[in-house]
Length: 366
Image 1 (cartoon, rainbow, N blue to C red):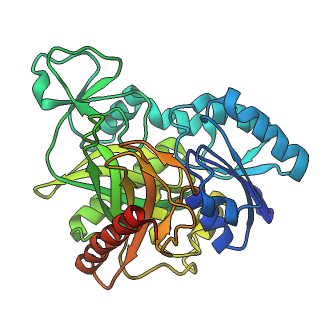
Image 2: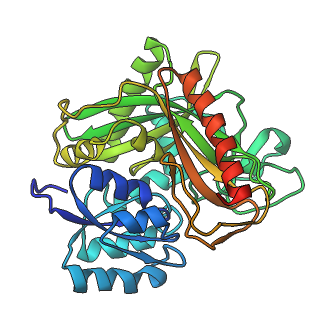
């Protein structure tokens, strides 16, 4: 994105578009959304929401054509889910102006062989990675070539064979850093700690939640800033992105770059989309006010099959709300919750309290 002219109405496309829709509305933009859930709060905020079966191009092309025909839009933001369908982003780029990383950059960052070779060439530490089945398979993770949110990641069974790559398992704090990238440099917005859930389907590394303003040492911050300067220059990253890493015994091990607006973006203030827009215009803007207190976001997965009660009085902190009467299968996301507080301990306490409240609401249907 090079032009400084940003329209007042945008197309948002993601597996779950609610966060991006909320960010756009909070920054004064109107939105048309394409996603796989069409949650009730997404539909309330967007001018129109198109629900699709997946983000494969064959599933979204009709909705995309309808948006162009009805609303005349030409600019879009994309979120999570296109990692699995990079060809969709390439197809969109032919007729739409993407406000964020190009399809080529997005795909290059996901090329695992190239990414880890690049980390090596830049002297950036990462867990050992191999692309053929290791002999000592019990200390390795098997990861898919394409994926997001921890989908498909599992501890390697020495007897199994699968299409993907292997990464040495390192126990430590699962962290990320949200940053804004432009041609002129990188701004570190905040460090985050995240956690996973072990679902019935065996997804022991499935993303569940994240808390902002995580405490890391100045030396770690300096190392991360230096690495991001190198990576942003190497890939030409633009806008809001995030870097995932493991922190163990004072050492960082880089896992991946999310070359898109990540879940942590909703935890740093209502005007953060402006940082993305400005960075895509190759200017870092320190005038955008950021949230100074920690916030947390967590996905609530169904422990058993759940039918959403009619006229459920959703709390204000519950988002990604399914429609009344929707049936949520075991292990699938019901909704998400967002908690605030004066410190990380208070935030996590509030998060646990909200989980209990929500469980009671879903059980009683009140």
